[in-house]
Length: 298
Length: 133
Image (tube, rainbow over all chains, first blue to last red):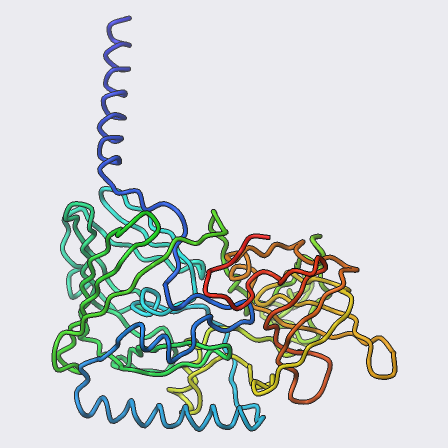
């Protein structure tokens, strides 16, 4: 009986040890990370100007001529919008989403993130509550007839020493009504959150990343974008991530319910704000109401 | 004050659908060409999503106190450079540099400030990435 318990205990310990050994082979990328050159400012924009961002990124997308022509048209529209803002016209728009999607979440987003490497999967968890799953268990990409595009795509990967090599396909724009072949690549900067379109990708875009730690406080992502539809050659980008200095836990943006905070902290104390004057959702149907009758939003 | 989000990227949807904007942010209400300095007393420090607000009482030219609403970025972004829900407290005497409202109302976009201790508030525009207070 005792030897049976010992054998059982030994088996458990061996199992734990094997698991621990597997875990210890994973690099320690713990902590929170932010993109160098895309850090937000306290004013609501970005610390770096758009010109600085473009210079630092050294972006030179090998756009096909027809793609570059469309980029130029869109940027011309954007310049008109900025000029209108400078004249004091309210031409801005609002939207309820916090979704950046891939690859923008990796190359020019103000959101911080954590990376959780495990032997079979590495998760990248962003403060907008987006998550990338990179499967490293040896699987292939999802079969074509089971795959559909999403804003984060289908990612598999493997480890080369302490470098995570990822391969991502089936990415689509996170924005509505853009169609399947307009995945925008933007640079953003400045106090007013000015953005510039530098390219857009098709549904055939294929992404390869090499993510590694370059020193204790910096990670690097060497990304290659291959898009035979929109690019004339592979596009190589390198982004650097810096350890967040003053925060040692994940804090999420509040994106649910249009991000409007009904339970704000005022002067350090939890409070409850009165309901908005215009309800967003239908109010509950009274218990004695006829079936199918809903109360209209007020 | 109109709710704003800080992500320029988000607005691409509008650009693509309406052909009018790359930026989601409603910074249009702030006059980016002007910087105004206001001095006053903190009434409330609202640590709210999606953006944080400083409610500050400021005396106008006639000596009458008026409430101003100064908008910052999100709690998550502020926490990353060292701000806390109690960084400012009611009664604090502070000085703020802001982009004022285009319409002349008592509000603006936070740029930088001097705290009650006479020191720059966290996240002043410096090359470093924030100084814990």
